[in-house]
Length: 544
Ligand SMILES: O=C([O-])CC(=O)C(=O)O
Ligand SMILES: [Mg+2]
Image (cartoon, rainbow, N blue to C red; front, side, top):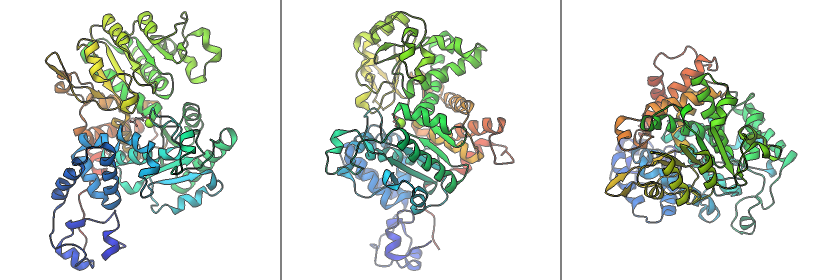
């Protein structure tokens, strides 16, 4: 340990507050710097949860949590793990969205690493300024599409910070191995450009070659600094850059796009689980998406891939069961020439259809998935149409945060007379309808990326392959218990998430070994046990 006395109390990695023992207080020059009482971590957790609960305003709870993270990291993680269901909506969606919108005015101490156009040519130096050297996971955003809230520029930093706190709390990756990064190439958000408290570059976004060069310098510097096996998670990039970056770097770097691949994996898991409630195989179902961006096309492709593996039918054939609606209506072959490349595989033969309601009535889907980033687009008429076509319509409102959800849980249950199987990206509380309580699930990539990342890291995997996403999906679906199904849930509760993550990690690693992508040899015998043994726990360590 580097510090003692006053500096020790102010170092969030080592500080334990009143939990320092008498011996530690003697050995580390702490006498007199703390009041005499010695309190165990459990008691500190009780105190802190009361502290957070006293705030009525979610953003204040968020600030209290960030404050704790900066003061006493182990207590922060202990609190988050012990109260995960309660605190996830605070450090993650929906509150983290509001925090990003207001980042300039709530900003107290910088978290993560900022790389702006000013640092062009110096990115390796910037990485060297970060205090930790052994980095295993980077979550990086350029802030252009933060949740469904749009361009928040440099203030998107809340997202990598939040995602990485889940890597630790939910997936057990050491906090010191996690590095949140925001790339600042400007913002096109006028409100931020005119805000004197805006923390980012006050210029419009760089694009084209200027953008590509900065990203390339970044990708190269990361690999040079941290080696081949550092995982780079792309988060909340706008569509055009997200698809291009993934395509460009997937064969040279260990990259994973959470919005395309993580969301796809979590939704496929929920769909596979829901088959236990509605019957049939994936191939028997018809899927309709509102939103044809990263999440929509990512999910669609993974459903097609899994269906094709199950039925031995070619991908082009099974894709025909999957339909997407974007802002211009149903994606059909007559629109092909004007479509962005990631939408083209979904342009099937059909007459033009203008809006979602007409598309539901024409396509007659069994599953309706919202990935549009637009709130309140699953109207009463849309849900009623789904309910008239299906005995048990599957309805997923995936856009985040809650304000952008395509419909609320209450609307889904009420308008379908309690028949919908519903899950949403951001959490909704249980709903009572005609005397029955319905518990909605949370179809959020937070189920997948922590365990997925752990699986890659612990096996020394060097590239992400689509089969690893399927392995993660399969492991998650297998964790839904009969008791969960009885409540209509297609996801297990977050309470057991560390156990779930260990199973996901193990299944992902097993697949990576099978594909020859894992470099940690020999392969551990029991991968679930191995995953558990790799996981960080936030209990205090004793200092001699
Ligand atoms: O952050 C979340 O809650 C899920 C996600 O990746 C997004 O909405 O972009
Ligand atoms: Mg995201």
